Length: 207
Image (cartoon, rainbow, N blue to C red; front, top):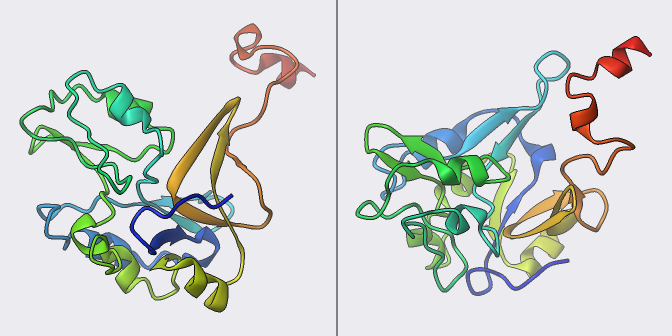
């Protein structure tokens, strides 16, 4: 399901299948004027032992952001466009609650600034209809910014902004290209027995 776009007619799209691991996005992110020279994008290795596939990970800008919910100092704000911003320096107590709570593993605690920092979708750019720094330099368009109509005309794939973490559904402002419609299953569903019954998986090994 595609919900309302975060920034007027523009939407931010991630297509992991297009990522070539060039790290252009990582370098460009550090050039964003509000990032103080820090790159706030993750470029994750899927499984180094079996594949060279990489996946860019930006803040997904959840509709109901967990990072803001767990912040004891009310330092993390969501603006009127649905963009979840980095922690406010005067309020942030550097507790790292947000780092632990984010289901996508996005926020970073930056010790030099004693502050949580994360992708803010280059709001100074996207609020004016300009692509985020990372999307503006991505040669394979694994990171893309545009209108739904432009996506339909120029791209393939199904868009989703719903992720299923066990029994919890998380809806995001950033859209992801998937093979099939519906919530993207991020973690496995319920098992026959709770993990606490066999936390080290020894029963599986013995079998």
